[in-house]
Length: 252
Ligand code: FPP
Image 1 (cartoon, rainbow, N blue to C red):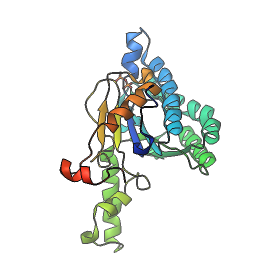
Image 2: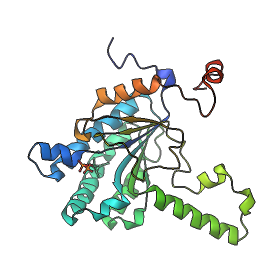
Image 3: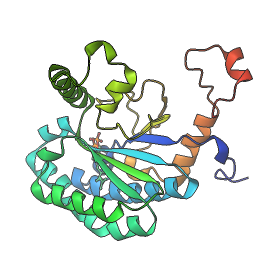
Image 4: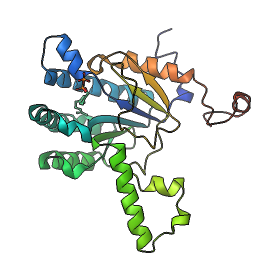
């Protein structure tokens, strides 16, 4: 049986989050510059987005540019911004056709204006779609997001819109960039690093983590299917015992 057929479609994660790592190393290993790796990485983005849409994943968040990535050499930052603009421009009709709805999280105002415009346009073009929700994390970091949420909460509390004692998990979540999305159940990181690098720290509280040594430009549909199979072999207990879990359905 091929790997795709082994996946149980009734037990898919609703939301997958991916740290696309290893573009630079992949390129270096081939005697190329880092930007070449990012270009090849876009091919993986396309394949994984389509793979998720085909199999029925509802939300896919891709960590495309962190707040820390601004500290990279200027040429690399510029190349990444240009790649982002060109990719969105080129792919938007395909996203529309494939019923994919684009969202963006992060400090969008810190992006070059041309990026902001292209993203806003692509969001508008795909706004009526109701298939896969593709969420690009751009100029994003969890600490930034949490601090922003805390500032807005403090402001609303000062203005009497909510009482500090009424703040619970649900209220806090509603102040995050990801308020409209469910938490990811599966986080994938490519390229052999075992950390989450300031990515969805709050939202990944109960996620299953899948780490693979494969560099992002080589991460394609079969690798995605392997991650899904691995996920389906895990027992998600949410603090309960194994016995309790076995008497209640996990994916209800
Ligand atoms: C990590 O590899 C990758 C990035 C910082 C950028 C990811 C961007 C893309 C895949 C292309 C643009 C994306 C979209 C959504 C159009 P790295 O450079 O950190 O690799 P290294 O760890 O080997 O140096």
